[in-house]
Length: 186
Image (tube, rainbow, N blue to C red; front, side):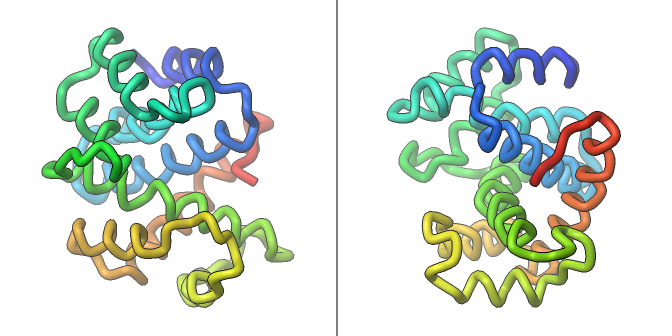
């Protein structure tokens, strides 16, 4: 499966603009970590793109329905397990870089986008310091699991500031690419 086919499949199952934007953001972050680990960037990006494919239609069963769909489409075991493991409630161990990265970027990518939405320059000029300041503000983006963000960075063995910086950069680059297609993360 290539990205275009994956994107069409995602859009068949997700109509929420905010959920699509979240998937694009997680895709961007996963591509960055694919490069970091010298892995297949397209495959890693697709994992981020498809990780919430079942969330809109089956929120109570997410990600288990999506996991079955991914198996049916022929995705390999590592990919499927990474998607399953991004939900703490599945109690699936995160043993691979792919699984650890998906967990670590899921909440943080959305949080960075939330920070961008309240900044005049959006993603441009954003620093890890401004993101960390918002992380301390419990009233801001309340639903974001701050403990999970920290736990994800620790599980990957990366410094939180470096992790945030890598995601900001990935989101900035992806926003430029998507804007050429008439799409935005924001």
